[in-house]
Image 1 (cartoon, one colour):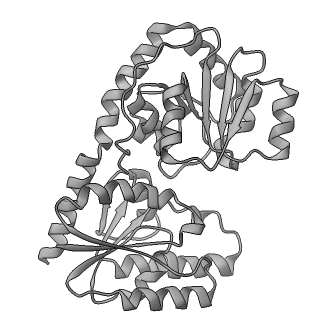
Image 2 (cartoon, one colour):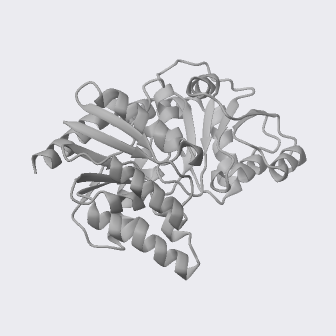
Length: 329
């Protein structure tokens, strides 16, 4: 059995590559695999045509073709061959206000790709339900993202006097601004991963937060950040999955995250939940974690158990079963 994986251009982002790299390394033990990146970055008509032409040339009637996300429109060049499409979330559709752009994305990124694909993998039940609210189909399966095995349980003595709080991401949805406000007068060190804007920097200065910042890190460096911290902070306003939750749990750290889907589904009540717009919810949670060792240890133990659901061996087996079923048809 052979699987051809198709990825968006790396310059668009590495998150999908990173998720599937973990899976592919495991699957290569049992199946033949080729990977391809589309040549164009954009989504204008010329880009779509060039990417589809590239994908068309890679068609293989003996292989299963798996489009890993974002470039849903390349399914147009994969008719009459076995295909799998992964849909991570529907932000590309739900956040578009222009009616013409929305119609375009509905047709070429959503409706036609789902119609063409033999199987559609959703990375959470929330994504699956969102799709079913828009279209009726029996092609959907839920397979979670696998946690990279470089993240391993590492015992750590919690620093109650001045804990290191690791904050992952600085985009609009990562809620850094509320975190900064909630940490006012709490003795801690805020370690921020991602590019900080001038506005965010001004906020850090205003609330006199002891912080440091790093970006453009390797996977090994990011892993070490989890090892070094006391708390993993991920109070997002919106997520398609929430991999830092699992990475934190797998490392054996207390995770603070948002009580929204799909994080509720992923975290499995093995985190400290907060509300994404409530500064007091966040502040009180930090204080409770800092002072209550029994509370911390309970979260860590439950987190380690939950992370097993996302092991690469478990997720790879689910994909192998899906591919085998499709291959037999």
